[in-house]
Image (cartoon, rainbow, N blue to C red; front, side):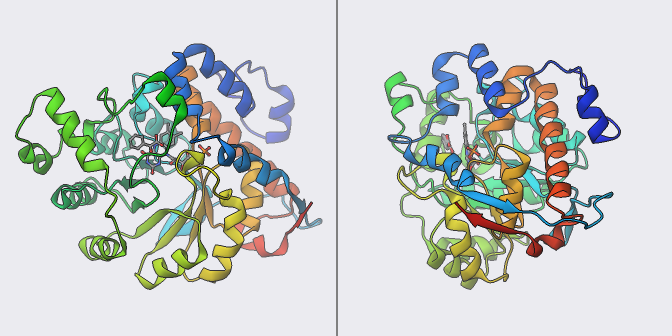
Length: 380
Ligand SMILES: Cc1cc2nc3c(=O)[nH]c(=O)nc-3n(C[C@H](O)[C@H](O)[C@H](O)COP(=O)(O)O)c2cc1C
Ligand SMILES: O=C(O)C(=O)c1ccccc1
């Protein structure tokens, strides 16, 4: 796939000869054509009646930007600093499990594409390749590790240690998935990628997990994963334990209520990812964009706020940052790139997102991200 954009963005956009999909909707359509219906359905769908999935998009169109003019935007600095690390762009790749559903090379292709554009990658607990293999493919590119708590706590702590040893820079603890949401698409198709072993790499590589099994057949391993990943007794006490167990910054992913954001700050948490898991967990909850202003007010700058669920283009990023986010996560869009064309597809999706973000920041009058306070949004 040839590069759409090289050199000056304006001239490049006009001269583009690239015939790959452009919008998120086009990538989604191409992915649907390539994939088996139940596999595509697992990625696309939300929980329940998909109210939240739809709301994640409509929330963005309810806000309109009041850009600033005459700010000299000839050079745009998109870099941000989180936990003492400087990152080139104000976005990261969201943790998405079982990427082998989309492409054989799975997470390895995604992390290589991320490395090409200096975009940090968040590896999932239920990845298709182990966190060590993903780290090796990342090379020097920054990566974070997303932890799903295991009922066998020793497995969780061992995964934390492995992530530290493999050079991960932060731990993302997902708190909205103590059990899977009511996923009607998967129920209809009787499909569970976890049951098919597509997300087992981190467990196979975990000495503590493997030694805990009485039955180490394929079936015994899957059973062990299912028993560990269903963790309804997860609570704030364990969050404090996790915080004590690692030297890395710890973020909570899946916070929507401002009071939970305050508890997170009080527990010494280093960052919050405002998220509703892409509408895949509790249906009917607020769009993360709508929860963000309340959380920003409660947290009052004490720790960084990230946001995901519904980010599809550069202008979405501008709105999220204007409402108080320090950075956003890109989810389904890069998985569709992966499904359509492997690493090259993810590279193309990221390149378009980076370039649209750059143009959007320039036209909003924001030459560098620290100037965000100057732009306003109005609610339609
Ligand atoms: C197929 C799929 C798998 C996911 N797996 C994980 C996961 O393993 N861990 C996690 O914390 N979030 C997971 N998520 C949620 C994403 O990290 C992110 O919150 C969500 O995709 C954001 O919504 P969006 O993709 O619509 O923008 C998954 C999402 C999808 C679509
Ligand atoms: O599909 C998901 O959204 C997800 O996060 C997940 C987590 C564990 C097992 C299967 C899916």
